[in-house]
Length: 422
Image (tube, rainbow, N blue to C red; front, side, top):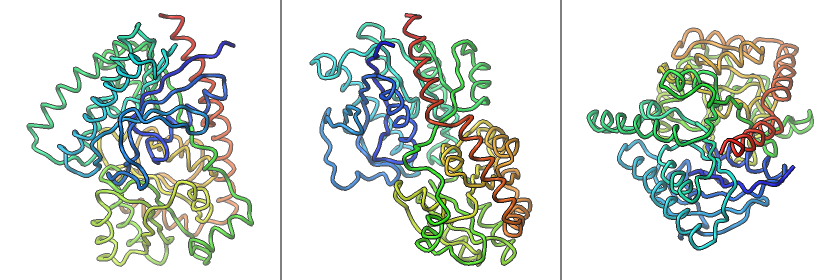
């Protein structure tokens, strides 16, 4: 099969965590299938909003990461609750990357791709996408990581309602323009597909490809490795432990978890919270005021996440009680499943269906403190055999639905398909 030159455009890329995982997994999977992959991205500043130590911004800074050519462009680093600062972050990458792809192609630094894969979050990534297409109408596949402009409401952005309303109207127009200029649109959940169809995107253009985790990081641990991990993270006691790891914002519904943990008290598990975000301070204060059995351990490096998941009995996935939550599939879902870790899910829709229908943990609705407290009590008292069943079911789901191999195969096939449609 002929090698393809593939340009990937994404605001986030390793060494950043979170939204950088999917582009990195896809880049690696395509490279293994013979693609010559180049990535156009920003400088690492997620999730703190500050440039990571050791980095200095410059225009079209080249590097190589795991066999992938990476071009980085400067941007305004920010990730706080200010709508204006977040917009500045997104817009600066859009403008900088558009200039980067123009200059890079004009000067022959960035090779002419056969096809391009574009991560649609934030939506300002459409600027470099359109500039790149101007150089010979490059076939384009867009990956919808967040549903815009809807995602602005659940991201905890703060600003004047009038500003957000105007931005919403403009972004609806912008999104529709970009969908029209893409040969294929990839969604990460069936719910997003249904919404896009209702907004006029042709159904035949939309493809559901489940997100795959970074399998070099997220893997099951042996019994001996689990024992060492429990000792490292202080979870070796008799009490069951539930982990939340990730961003601490309004969208994750974490106040519900803390209130439920306080309600369950000694009859529930210890809750360990790893990560940071705009709501971290408020969550710490809430846990302290309720005397909840919650322990905050700060950010944990990506490389240690498999060990952290191996040190606990289950992991928590939560979403706020918002309309967008029903069609949201947090990327941590696949990472937890790849580690064969049971899940306690306080969310509606697609993510709840994955957990419930495949019997890999416990499920309740979003924002329901009473029901979540009952789930926590169940986790604390269920026998080891049930935990083993949940782990085995998670392993099966990862193998059959969410592996990097399956995501790579599907993406490779789609990229080759859109080239023939040119």
